[in-house]
Length: 177
Image (cartoon, rainbow, N blue to C red; front, side):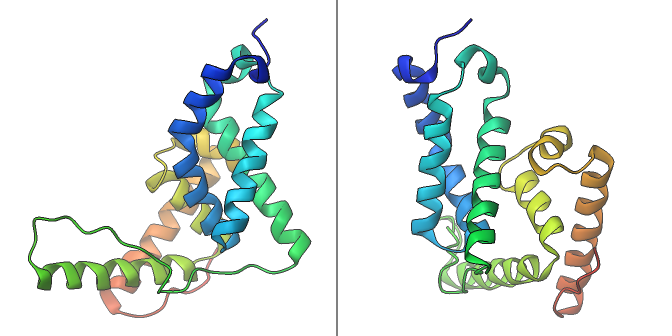
């Protein structure tokens, strides 16, 4: 049996180094507040400390994102509100290659896409973020979100179709989950 995480400092440091940033981004999108997101992620890593590293390592990313998501949802339920990030809080990192006009256009397009993503039903938003912001497979998203693999595929399909249509039409996304 593997050592509990609290006894395996190198493993915990490696997990924090690799996953802290993506988990904070994920949690902040769920709870809408950077400070609360950091607290959620800190609690996630504290819970990891009590786990058997050998048991958790094969699915570490899934475990971390599942615990993080569950904790964030607990916080939201406790607060009985869900805050969305404002446009000013959304940061888009442009590349250094394009000119200033292209950068502005990309920022506007990205901000529009994020606004449209935020207008989707929460279950579609969540699975799309897990897939495209965090690179999880449908199977991993299924285990994180609690949806079946086929439902994950359906939610991603319907959400992306809605986003594509809305981007083409320049209209807000409709809640059709």
